[in-house]
Length: 120
Image (cartoon, rainbow, N blue to C red; front, side, top):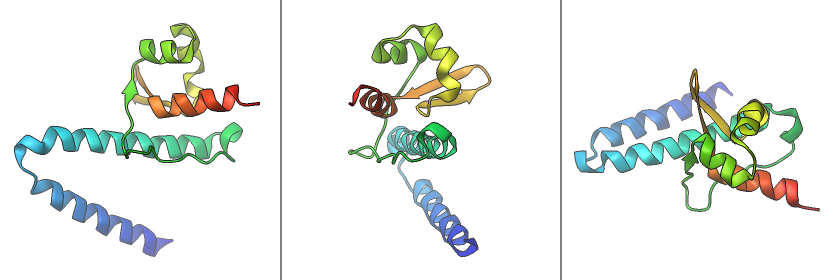
């Protein structure tokens, strides 16, 4: 496992070097892609740690990106109240805490959650 961690570190070092060479006008797009990658990693980790979804595979978004939304939009997509979403955020693998009082929700995670809940 240590060799894999070392290899991953080298890959990240190369990524950072590549990002340093990006033109300034491409930085906002790069930040968006990095946020989507971060959300994807949080989804994988949350799914791995959640006993109820441990057996569920979390596919990568088809276009390589994922959009996150605030609690109001998440509640609308889920068909639930904002208070329900806040109460259940800790147990939902689609929720990502981004600060002490801020939570964002993965749109692709919401879709997978609804597909699992609505499938026979």
